[in-house]
Length: 235
Image (tube, rainbow, N blue to C red; front, side, top):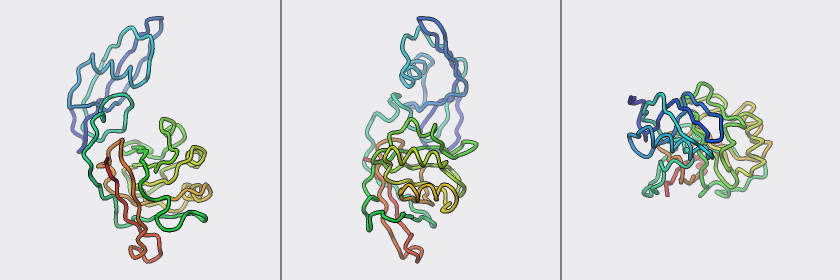
């Protein structure tokens, strides 16, 4: 079955059972993975699931339901969906309310804002698009701009515990399409000394892996020194 839910690459939503050769089994329902094309057979999908989860001693897999969905890749590990390096292109992520808030002690000018590798956390389409520690567990944020794609214009996008995790692991910057600049998320980021870029657009066009973020302060944009132009560059 195939369903079109928006522009982007292809993913598969499926139910499966993995049987282990040394006994036991693992069942999944509504599991989603990026796929490298617009179709995949059950055998290949079973192998993809095993590689993605890093499972050992697998005796066999059974796919009991499968639906192809057209939507942006989430960066599924070991699927080959993003194996071909994309042609270099620039995605303008600047929206009418894009702002950068830098806590006391952050570098002036463009220090710590440009040429940052992106760790993209896609939450668009989820019931509660707020990343907690568990949602960030698959990522290695050290030295990265952590970009949280919520798919909505306002509301929180990180829990305070998630901010603490990013601070522990050395994230350089956090960016999001949410416009929220007050509340618990903003306070936690400021206390952690992590700059926050809010009000981005076009995050569906940002590739799941291999992008770099460039944020250029643009005081004339809002008159209070927080305006910014933001670009994602796919290498």
